[in-house]
Amino acid sequence: MAKPTDPTEIKTGRPAKNPELGKRMNVMFRMNEGPRSQVARKAEDNGRSLSEEVERRIEQSLRGDVRIHALMTLVGGPDMLMFCSFISGDLNNAIKEANNKFGAEPEWFKSDEKLEYVCAHMKNRVEHTVQAFAGTCFTGAAQKISNHIISQE
Image (cartoon, rainbow, N blue to C red):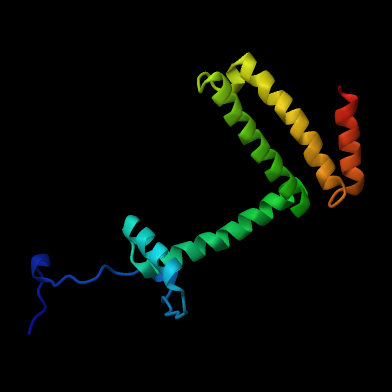
């Protein structure tokens, strides 16, 4: 029997897989019902199968490790990354407080009142954060930073 040449006569099946990705492996593992249900809901929300959602989240996790390592290298190590995350959280809280006190508009850096409020809050928080870290992470560096902050007053 001759092969059909008309494309409408050719049966279509699953789309061809990307050969560069290689063969997908089956991986089996156990999971509690709570997290499984959460991942299943997210998979449905994202239009993916449970397997695709799990695979995507694992890939994101692995990329995240690389990003965190790069970020730690950029800021000077894990202690400095933690310090920066505390300061970032403090700044975020100061901005929220300024918006609650003075209104959401204009943005905090476009309003003299808000900017002054955020700067005052941050000066206080940075000093406390540096001193909190001084005894645990940056014994010498934190004291120098703290002395510098105090000398600026």
